[in-house]
Image 1 (spheres, rainbow over the protein chains, first blue to last red):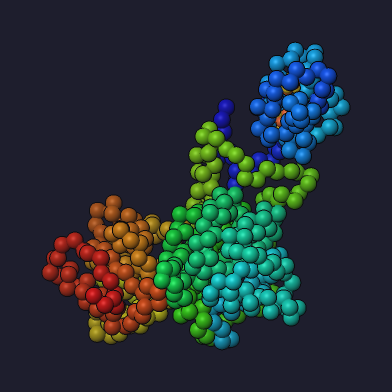
Image 2: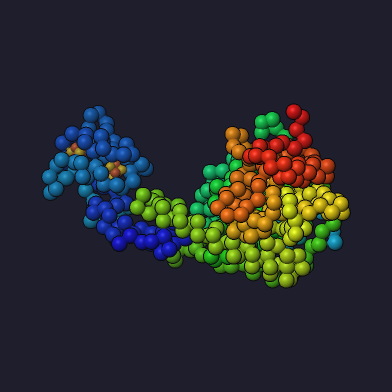
Length: 99
Length: 390
Ligand code: SF4
Ligand code: SF4
């Protein structure tokens, strides 16, 4: 149920920061930056095409890694990567502290 | 009693209130407010953080930052400076931040001019800020002190701009009453901020994205703040009066009770208008004055009560809004009165642009014109320009 204006916090403030994880708005675990394994990569460059921050590094026509200064952890590259789940060259490390 | 110009009167009030932060960017003539505050701080007379920033836009953005962190903040600006703040003013009001700014109402360029008119504040009339206008130094001082209390009220939480007329009020000295520091501190008693981004135990998202599913509701929630201020402005004005014997409301009426003709205007010209009313009353004319103090929220209900029995009214706007039928004060007054069964005829006047004088004679002429037009049953009033060579 959407709230009425009387029920909103003043100033459009959201006191429930970081709630997108709690509410499961992103099942790719938002804000976890992916790891890259070159051995599994087919170099189709789909991740490079879709990455909104140009963070996929390509050298000599090969994907060589992720520029973590620009990667925002949106997970789009993982979704777009056509390789099967078990073999994905882009994945989130189990250790969730990666950020 | 102390002889102070309008700028110094505002600075004096700020010294007593001692906000956490004063943000400074120089505009003429409001810089004199900030200069005086800087001197107070340098002399150890007040203990506020004084931030020099690189533009008026930065000044308002800094105010937003301070207020979001739960700090009390003040800045002053004028004319082009207020115009440059435009975008950030909307952010401040919609985030419901209790910022107070002093505005020396100076005209907008071009041509460049440093004198009074209300084009700067009027251009911000839809920014969601409470707008209070002062007739003289005393009112400037009193309004600033009330402004913090209004802005910080938990039902209001809306920023306030207090206007004084450039040069005529800001730079001319007159004797004013300054209250004792203790009295002011007792009057203010700072409210706890409703939220603060610096509270790491309770993190908040401020200024987040909002889609069409909630935007309208948020705007309505914002509007509620300024609507609530109606009651608070009245109560604070009364409390101020009870304590310091100078009472304030949405407007001041002068000889209006039994008047048949009245002039409505704002700020410094009210002094001249009062004198004109006195002169005409001596000759037995039933004339009066309404000096509007609070332009936002616009006190349309109260104006109806005070004005509906008059024969006709002249609304004097100190701003030219090109391409409209009269200035903002005229349009809002008309809107307030239109749905009444019995309403006075309302005449639009424009005056005083860029500091152009308005004299006793001009105001007496306005009353005479109105009376003549009413007696002769002349049709629809046209806009008239006072003291313009044409
Ligand atoms: S997680 Fe997002 S930003 Fe980072 S590399 Fe993948 S697509 Fe680019
Ligand atoms: S989308 Fe997958 S397979 Fe294709 S280049 Fe990127 S990581 Fe390699």
